[in-house]
Image (cartoon, rainbow, N blue to C red; front, side, top):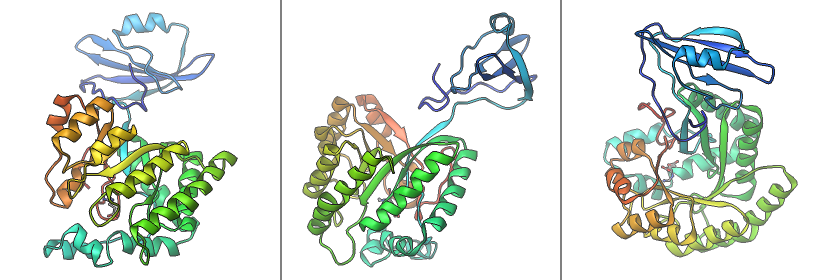
Length: 350
Ligand SMILES: N=CN[C@@H](CCC(=O)O)C(=O)O
């Protein structure tokens, strides 16, 4: 049985008379859930480590845990018990919402048209650069709490609305603070290549990331000030092309980060092929992935992180989830919570 923070989700059918207890053993506080259904009881005791220890008929489980004492009783009548959800792609640290852009979108403007006109990510960057660390932490904390209430127990959290070193580090420190203080798992992603900063070319931005951002990140990782797991790039026409993406991802990998990037979202970029070649852990979006890209990802065991809310909101075609699964690609899901796609929950639209 997988841990509650694991990727698999199992549903227990709600049934009448379902009860659960918390129990205290000599070693740890554990929970003992009891599902009583037409004479059959299923008791999944949950230990402090988050793992379900056993599932079975009540009498079997009771005799197995006979020495344990119950701490409290939780009535789960009409409810179901399910492990925590993993949200594999979010942009939750920012200031400057983009509600005003919805009117432009409804009038027919595309995501890239708004971006190229200086809005979109640029708008959020402007506000995030001006925000204090405290302001960012307060709103981030509130968003994480809402995600947790919606069932997510592990959330991948990206920087990427700083673009300059100072603000990217501010965002990563905010993520680190939450990682240490909140009751939710966090996988932290440096996304300094989320967009080309105003006044720079993509090549200049790439050089800045490789020569300045990544060495500083490595220093802070080594001193234990921050813990970053992944590196991300928005590999897209008009943002970072395949060559720049390759340079940044390779440099990130060389500093010990896992590759987890945006690819093949609005245009076919051969991002999937690149990710597979570089040993990427995951690639997100993939609405425009090629057949060869799907095959390469399956072979390389590179996970596809699909973001149905985003495809819906941006009116993109939905990614080929069934085809990917049939080809043997690992498929994960993300809410893609960001100021453009305001979705906290993995199980429903906002
Ligand atoms: N596509 C690029 N990045 C985000 C959107 C970020 C934003 O628009 O603020 C995404 O994953 O959908």
